[in-house]
Amino acid sequence: MEAAALDQNELAAKLEERLRKDREGWMEKIENLVQMMKTITKLSEAQVYMLSYRQILIDKQTELQYTIYRKNSDYEVFYRSKFMEYVNSATKLNGGERDRMVKADLTVIRRQISILESHMDFYKESIKTLDHMAFAIRNRIKLEDDY
Image (cartoon, rainbow, N blue to C red; front, side, top):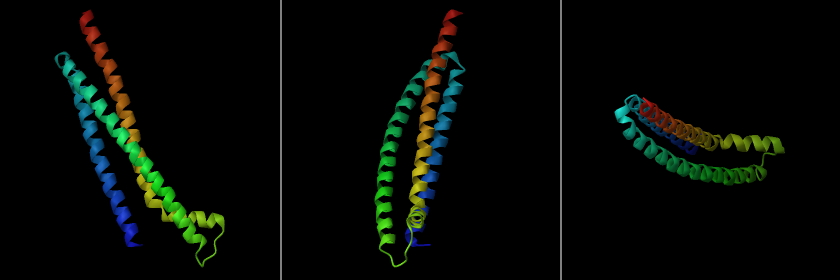
């Protein structure tokens, strides 16, 4: 395996680890909000955190989307470059073989994009969870006011 491929695999592994820690941090924050919602006196504090966390996640989601766009653009550029490399090589390949070879060369970039897209899904689901929590807080306050 080439040194560049090893570096790219290492980068992908580091990316996975960094995003895993980010997910764990957000899961802990959301769990803390759930615990706060159990106590009526902490509902207003939970509501403030919930709104703040939601905005932070939206900002992170936007940044991540830009990163995914850049990675997809890089993939297309590398794909074209590798494709031309195989077209001009001494080994003659048909179109399907060439395509498979190029994709094999670029699997690490595809892996990085998949990792980022998975994390994007996590952000989207976390935002949905926070939206549901906003309704839960509102309903909890309404229940307390009714009694």
